[in-house]
Length: 279
Ligand SMILES: [Zn+2]
Ligand SMILES: [Zn+2]
Image 1 (cartoon, protein in one colour):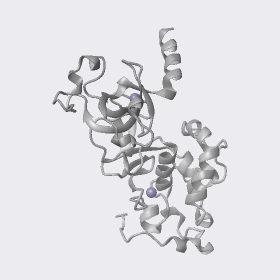
Image 2: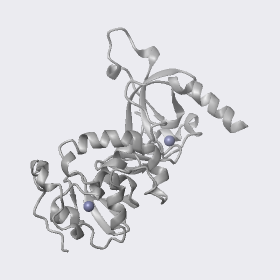
Image 3: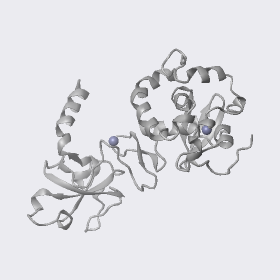
Image 4: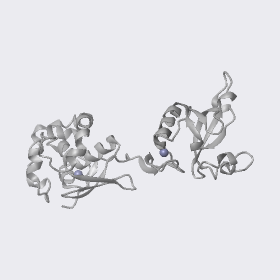
């Protein structure tokens, strides 16, 4: 039962039709009590075989996720899938990201560690048979669906709204969610003056650390009092300061706490949000 680390079986080896039938069926999941279901569930997928709660959450994901992940993951292994994709979707599993880019997968039959990039899992199915096991597949599915961060991501908290968001693994400083973040080149509006600007960069510095050329933190300015000191500073240039033929990066930049700027194309949505909140 000690997981071997002989390295993955070459993918081409799995093409062999003779590999379809597991030589010793009982080896698959030694501790399982649901062996029957594993077999009957093959190909049944959304049928009555799944009476547990996972069926609900998978129901919507199934139709599109099945096509996507199977197309990439299983196209070379259709012959020996052997129901793993179906089980990856429907079996009860809890996936949690570790801090080292791996994932812990808890199942009824045991707890395993998956390394998605390396394509390894500590379960017997992978260790003994070198399979792309259901745990690996489940982690890949959840990453694709956005329910867990990818191997190069971690969970961050938006400095504006507090929502959890997936950010690059090494991202320093305060973070912003998709709704409150900016891309270089975004057209934005300053809430204080209603002036249009173009975003140049989202810095990794907080508003109480980022200093203007006079040496004063931008959080110390009265016009920034309504915005969080802990927010990342966004650098932007005034649209008025741009001249034909000149580059945005050459214009004079100003720093703003992130929530002081709002994307121009969000202005309408924000108004309707405010109406919602005031009801
Ligand atoms: Zn596994
Ligand atoms: Zn946010």
